[in-house]
Each structure stands twice: as C-alpha cells, then as structure tokens.
Amino acid sequence: MRREALVQQIREKQSFLCVGLDIDLEKIPVHLKDVEDPLWTFGKAIVDATAAYAVAFKPNIAFFETYGQQGWQSLERLMEYIHTTYPEIFTIADAKRGDIGNTATRYAKAFFEQMDFDSITVAPYMGKDSVEPFLAFEDNHTILLGLTSNEGAQDFQYLECDGIPLHQHVLQQSQSWKGSERLMYVVGATRAEALEEIRKSIPDSFLLVPGVGAQGGSLSAVAQHGLNRDCGLLVNSSRGIIYADTTENFAAVAGQKAAELQQQMKTLLQKYAIFSS
Amino acid sequence: MRREALVQQIREKQSFLCVGLDIDLEKIPVHLKDVEDPLWTFGKAIVDATAAYAVAFKPNIAFFETYGQQGWQSLERLMEYIHTTYPEIFTIADAKRGDIGNTATRYAKAFFEQMDFDSITVAPYMGKDSVEPFLAFEDNHTILLGLTSNEGAQDFQYLECDGIPLHQHVLQQSQSWKGSERLMYVVGATRAEALEEIRKSIPDSFLLVPGVGAQGGSLSAVAQHGLNRDCGLLVNSSRGIIYADTTENFAAVAGQKAAELQQQMKTLLQKYAIFSS
Image (cartoon, each protein chain N blue to C red):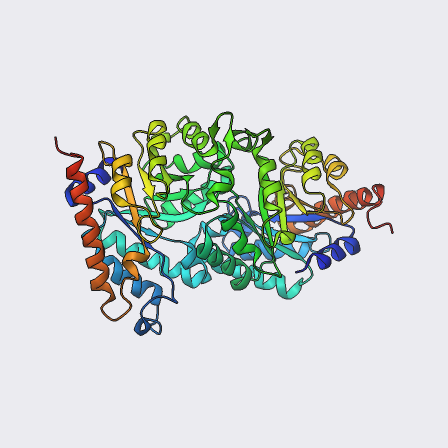
C-alpha cells in the first residue's frame, strides 16, 4: 500500500488507530479455547468488530510463531482474510526482524510476498545493509525501531553518542538510506515530550506509537507533539481493545473500545486542523 | 544443553566448528530442487556429512521462514532429526529476534520449547527486558549481537558513547543482567584485533564468530585473539561448506571441507594448549 492510500483512509475514517493483535491463548474468552483454530477465530472476530474504526492491524508475530507451523498457518489464514475482506486496511507485521543482505531479503519475502503485509517492524542495530533490503520493496513500508516504550530503552537508546542520543542517530542516519521515503518509525509514547525532539529529525515520517493506554501514554499528548499535516501517526492499542471483555460479548466490547478511541482521534484531528484544507 | 556439555564436545572432537545452514533453494544442487521437501533433504544430507567434524549447527531461520508454514514444517522436521540423531550437537536458531517481556517469552518458547533449540541469536537494541526473558530458560543460551561483521556495523555499533563504542556498552551492561552466565555473543571476525578488546570485557563468554572464510576473516587470527581456557569460540562457516560443490557429490565435499576446518581447529587448539591440562 502506498502512503497516499493510508493517508486517504485516515482522512475518511477520521482515525489513526492501529489494533494490535497480540493474541494470547491464555487471555481469550474461555468459550474459544477449544475451537479448532482459536488464534484465527479470535483474530477474525476482533478484526470484524474493529475494522470500521481502525486504519491498521498489527499482528504480533511472536504470538503465532510460538506455536510453530500451526501458528504460522493461523497467521496466514488471518492475513488472507484481512486482505480479502478489508483491503483498505494497512497491515503491520510486528516482527522486529533484523539481519543482513540476502537474509533480510528472505524475511522481507516472508512477510511482504508470502503473506502480503504492507509493512514490518525492523531493528536497527546492524545498520544500513540490514534495513535497505526491506526498503527495496516499493509497495511496502519498513518501520524501524527508533525509541521504544519499554524500560530497557534506557539501556542503549538514550546513550549519548557524539552529543546526541543513540535513537537520534538511528532516526537521522536512516533518512539517508536508499528507499528512506518508505521508512516509518516505532516511537514509544511514554515520554510524549520526547516526540517533539523526534519530530525535529523526522518531521514527515509516519510514527507507529505503542504504549498508549495500557502502557500509560496519553493520546492527547501524543497528538499534540506527534501530528503532522498527513496525520503522521498510527497509535496502537492492543490489550485495551482485544481483552476489554472476556465473555461471549468480547467482540462487541472490543468494537466499542475501538469506536471510543476513534472518536477521541477524530476530535484531535479536528482540534489540530489536520485535513482541514 | 549446559555449557559443560558443549565444552566437553569441543574437547572430544577437537573442533569449534559451527556449520551454518543457510539453505538457499537457488544454490542447492539441481537434482534436489524437485524433491518433495528440498530444504529438509539438503539439510539432512549436510548434517549427516558434517556432524563428525562440527560441534554446532546453525539454521538461518529466514531461509525457512521465507516459505511460510511450509518452511517452518521443514525446519521442525530438520530440528527433530538433528536432536534424535546427533543429540550431542549444540543447535543455534539464527533468528536475531528482539522484543519485550511477554513477547520475548513467546519467541523463546517457539525456539527453545517448540523446536528444542539450545540457543538463539538476539538483538540488543531494546535492552535488558528484551533479553532477560530468553535468559530465564536455564538449559538454553542466548547469543546477543555484539559486533557484527557486515558493513552496516559501522553505522551504530562503533559510535562512541561516553568514551567507549556502543558494542562495548552492550557487552559490558549485558553482563549484569539476570542469567548472564547463559549469554554468548555474536562477534564478527572482520577485524580480528577487535576481538582482543572484546575479550577484555567478556573473557569467559563463548563467542559465535561468523565471517570466517567467505566473509574474509582469518581463522588463525580469530583463534589467536579469541580463544579462552574453555575454547570459548564457535566459528561459523556456511557457504564454504554447504555450497562447496553443487553436483550429486555435494554432501561428500561438504564433509571434506568441514574436516579440513576441523583439522585446522585441532592444530590451533594444540598450538594454544587449550585442554592441555
């Protein structure tokens, strides 16, 4: 999917909500645990309930991979359903892969070709030649880890290197890589004021923001510091939507939670006059 | 597998050879391309031909994952064969995963429980809470990316942060993490003299060294700067062994190449009097 199509969808839905599909078999409703393919059954129900309010779906690959080939089968099935039923929705493989050259190309093919994801999250530690193979796919986006929202982000991402923190090196250097117009960035929301500094380095890029809601970030602070003229944000919510209810009514409640976030996002898009022209 | 069992195997085989299973369907012998499961058929033949000379096998996960659930099926089949037939050999999932908390645990379960790998390669960018979930598995090892051998290693890994390069921060900080006695490190061989600095920070750890052979590193330089009293090295060779011949004789030639490396390693272990007591 091209950036313009994503922006158009955000404008139409007045939403920049990404629903994170971290499908944990220990947390799904009891009545679904014994169905033939619970990952798929639960995932499909959440997708159907939230598609009207979300612009992106983000399966967390670990939660499928942990079941080996069976998990991959469920993931492929879910991706095929999303693409067929909601082709306008942007899909993110939250895989955090990172390897060089030919190996990176193999990962890219797994997600971009085998499963037709629009984008994938990628780790930066190995540098340019571990990211450019993903960027070579012209209809896809590569979402580089910039500043993450976990406690361990303190260990290396904030280290001062030649006067600026490591994550700023990642943001700035990556802008010179081939295909960088198809880069997006993971930027945690735990320190919304950090978003201001980040926007100085990458004013135009889309940011995938985890950590709003369950992880404590504030949606309005993220919007204040992160919005750009194309919106430029995809704000993820997982647990707050998909496990909001664990009865047979779970899907309807997930839809309500997604709708509430969409309403807040609509208000923020209007407040900051995004798409007002 | 515990460290002692790995060291014992190195002593017995007089080898610290890791055979990298980067199985590329475009590079395997023509006569294998149309068999029912070429990843498995080629992999099994290489494993059987080299097991006498190698102490570790390292499947490159991308080369399986690129075929989706079918690739995972081949990988599971190959791993089951290795464990059944060569239970003494140390197995490395070259997966370079990296995510936090519960997600990291899912990746660990995929490789350590679902497929019974002894170890996995992991990226450090997200810090302590992205690595400790792997270290919590007491019979497994986590192989952290320290200094990689690709060109892009220059982008971030050599950045000076508070007076020392980023990769030194990774080596030094990670030593304080819970379960760090089960940490190993990926250290590229392109600059063997860098190994000397690295050994000052982590004298006792095992190092997984790619980049010897096809990527240009010298085995004797690696041994000179990297060996410790337990050997402490796993030197990987992939292309130089598995694609040394592409006729029907490929497996026998792979075995010869592995045997040649084992002989060189034996000479080096004797030269530096490792296990001489």
